Amino acid sequence: MAADASIHASAVLIGAKAVLIRGASGAGKSQLAWALIQAARNSPSATLPFARLVGDDRVHLEASGGRLLVRPAPALAGLIEVRGLGIRQLPHEAVAIVGLVVDLAAADAARFPAEEAAQTAISGVSLPRLAVAPGQDALALVLAWQGIAPVPAPAAD
Image (spheres, helix red, strand yellow):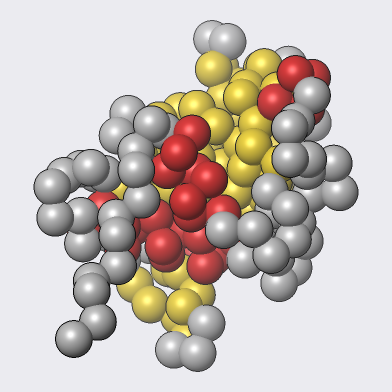
């Protein structure tokens, strides 16, 4: 990967580190990004105290000092696609350090992933990786990886 590569992906800052969301077109990258942001916004007990968009659809990656930095593509900064509603503008972070890579609809997703599948290297930077199977609840998996229990749905009246 080039020193400053542009890739088809989304990224959300959760606390101090960003989640880089990869996957084919239509895999749910924007949907997961939106769900993470909404989970922080709607968290009744601050289980997910902070989440902010870094970039949606296209981001720039740069390895620096042993860390992987992610930035929004300038033309798309602050924009996110909400399926069924269109493009929305949100507050965003100009740059973040990637702490987790999520691969949606991953061919190697497994019920009990092999140790080597739980890591990936991008531009020489080794990062933890979650391989999400098609149809699997990516939000619940990311929250579990973060050590956060999913917020229960309100009880039906």
